[in-house]
Amino acid sequence: QKEVEQNSGPLSVPEGAIASLNCTYSDRVSQSFFWYRQYSGKSPELIMSIYSNGDKEDGRFTAQLNKASQYVSLLIRDSQPSDSATYLCAVWAGANNLFFGTGTRLTVIP
Amino acid sequence: DTGVSQDPRHKITKRGQNVTFRCDPISEHNRLYWYRQTLGQGPEFLTYFQNEAQLEKSRLLSDRFSAERPKGSFSTLEIQRTEQGDSAMYLCASSLGTSGSTQYFGPGTRLTVL
Image 1 (tube, rainbow over the protein chains, first blue to last red):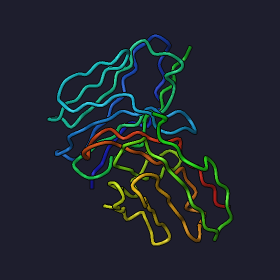
Image 2 (image 1 turned 180 degrees about the vertical axis):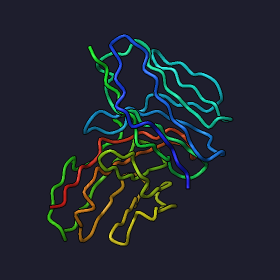
Image 3 (image 1 turned 90 degrees about the horizontal axis):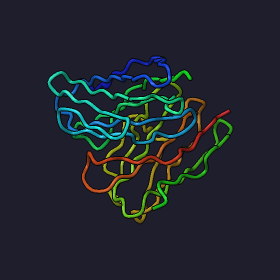
């Protein structure tokens, strides 16, 4: 059973702060990792993908992957109220589909 | 590139009725996925097509569910004899190339079964 675990939150941060979102996964053969943002009532929107250990930066977003610890995180710098959404961690482990966590709800307080 | 589109965006039906949803993937994307998402949960995999071939079905996909992708382009998902437990957001995603490549989601079809 492939499992992806996320803290459901809600996570509240003040505007301008760093938001840190965490995800752990159970399948050691997992190879690709994705962060999606989902606004209420909308569909998931890709934020970042990461495949190798270490950090990957894209604008205000940084994804961090540690395969030994089976841990992937997303940092959002200079958080904005528009970042308020649910963030879904998704893992590909060699199957034909992604396995998703339940998501972490982030609220950025102006 | 217009992205993944889905139709209808919302569907309200009575229990026992049949419903059909359509998904148009991003042009040239050979892989197409259907997921279901309920409130407070992440998307759950239903089925997957590579071109016109349906290569995998989840145990979630009961006999009342059927999906097609007849020409390797758009796909349909039909639910027969709907039940209240079928109420959910049905999401379609597409990707290009090998498995593990990035999946792009459509806007979803929200189904409400009364």
